[in-house]
Amino acid sequence: MIFALQLFHFSAAITFAFFASVVMGITLRNTGPEMVRYGLKCFGWFVLGMFIAGWLMWILHH
Amino acid sequence: MQKTETTANTAKPASASATPATTMAIIAPALGWLIPGAGHLIQKQWIRGLLLMISIVSMFALGVAMDGKVYKANTGDLLDILGFVGDVGAGGLYILSQVLDWGNAAIAVAVADYGTKFIVVSGLLNVMAAVDAYHIAMGRKK
Image (cartoon, rainbow over all chains, first blue to last red; front, top):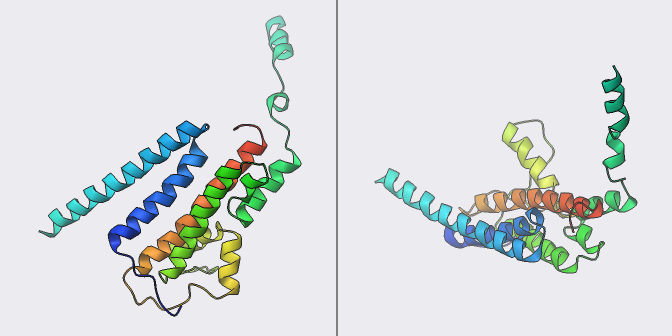
């Protein structure tokens, strides 16, 4: 690869959460509205987990 | 004894309640594995298929663009074997990466590790999508 895409850790994690939530919403629920709700819920949990993990690492480091 | 016979007569054979496997139930997951989202598209689930395709292909492409590692078949470290299993889930994308020799560069940037995870997870998500296509083909999901 001539150049490597340089995402920040935060943007990489958000991108990961977004695509994973889309697939999980579609595959793990049956109807359209349920899929949207579950996808949004997954995305929210991903982001929340990311912030919690980030603060935990900060606390452990200090 | 009489009671046992009555029970045996009223009990349904296990195969009677199961949905018979159709050609679509074989083609949809296989095609879905080979081309992400195609298992849904072939069953006219256009929006779901396109969203799955965009999501899985984007994750794999971003992983490769971040210089992530694409695992080859190996019998070494357990994590490497698991990484290979995850990568193979991406189907045609994995084959393409091997043909075009993607994901073999020496890791030189910090986010390359994220790239490796993006590639593995895109493979695992593709397996989920293929299983979902199978469930739709079998009529277990609409």
